[in-house]
Length: 239
Image 1 (cartoon, one colour):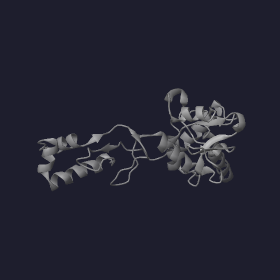
Image 2: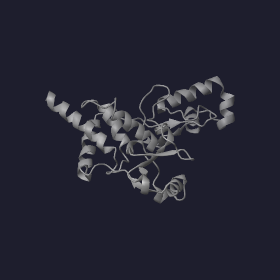
Image 3: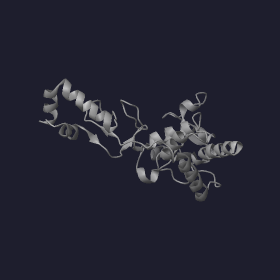
Image 4: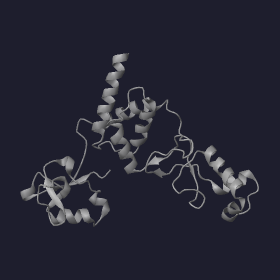
């Protein structure tokens, strides 16, 4: 998640640079921005220290602003965050183990489709039975079943995904890393309407995956802490 916002100087002190659509009643700048006091409406930008000369750095200069990094409240210390991680991991420990993820080249199957190994092999069998000539054109002579599997199926190791990977055929949960986008979408859902109950191991496992690369000072820990606190209270009430 981009964690920097542009805060104003001078006449715009205490305000944040936002998209004009956030306040259609206000006169936007020529390039489509408005200054608003609500930080939650501010545009999130990438870290300017690592992104070099960008639109963000230009906007900060043109509009007389400076970058501020969003962080969690001071009460969420590293120790507290570590405790939250431990609670989430414990609740997720009984979740169904994720299967290894496999895929095919685009000329064999839809690019981006993921499979468990059993379904991937079944698809290879079907493709071979339907049109062995086409299979040979793609991968050469593969008379033995295992040779066909080895030639056509790729994967078996974790890569980045823009959503939690699942098998296209049987819908089994698969193993993989979440991109920043995917992790953020999962955190939004799992700290909102889809927040896990204390005994929902699969949702805790999903949250455990989503927070894998979350730094201890990330502001999203505030919402995650509320979910954990609610689960602890519910758990105590039935103990």
